[in-house]
Image (cartoon, rainbow, N blue to C red; front, side, top):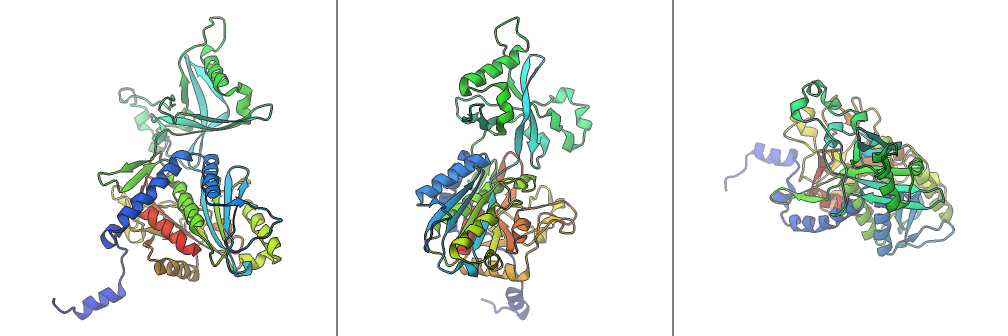
Length: 464
């Protein structure tokens, strides 16, 4: 073998590029494929924030977690969970070190873009029954037309009974959809900007096309739809005002590609980080630092509301931990470290113009560490310090985690936010870490199994 030149030696010593995991560690492929089977089941069973919380509780109980009791005392290794209004979940494994040395916080969100039913949704027009919707979060509206949709949610009846609704997930269930124009008649529609290909008030859900059999009745198509809902769930039209009903894609998580190397599914932003965080939490036995794993709501609409991170429910939980230990909460917070576990936009070679290739994340190169998010001049961003970046990178490299760094697109191309700034607001060192995603916020997002697996490994290292 020829002797390396000085330039070649310097290049190896001084430069760096993130390796492709399958090339660098092919032995991880089988492990990643096995791990992601549980993840796909989690996606199929948790298409709303409420369903994710229920699935999370089931996983935690199976692992020996008990409901958190603020009046109890706990020992290292004890495992507890806390539920906030059925829409957010916190899990904790008590650590060996005192709380004053800080806790390890890992926060992911379990809400995803979707179509919500309006409070008064049901109507008929030209002998077809429809639901009116209001989209939730950042969607590209045209993507939600002509795809099969399922209804999920809850209705609280007048007597106080809560009814769970799910139509469209079983093979025997009907599904729902938003219609669109045929190309033969869409000349005028084709002149619209892409963002208005389907407008918000055009995202109307086809509910039915048969009438209630009574020639004297007004709005018979609406009445038949109501009667079918009443027969199945015992609800009336007035009950819609006491309901949370969501339209989500009626598709299962599927392997993508001839090599089955990727997962295609709805809601991977950010349930991919929720699942990896939760499994890493469960695997923590007697960690050095007490863990606080958060599956939170409302991120897609700004984290507002009392189940979102812009409320104080996490702070109150940490205050309860502080009271139990007889310490000041500020002493815990200022020494804590948080991973804001959220996805980033994977580089898409079909649309290179909106990325800056040297500072983008790529599929199959591991979890992505995002120093800052925000828009344009980092507006609305946490922007992690050099010290925080060094600490998290060191944790991952000690455990052989494949990681990369990336921004959310090119400067001035757009941007986005996460829960990081709300945790940082409590004087907690925080940085974003998650999975690169293709087609983010679409009804069918793509993630690499190797990236999912290494995100799990990163969270496990964070809790070690």
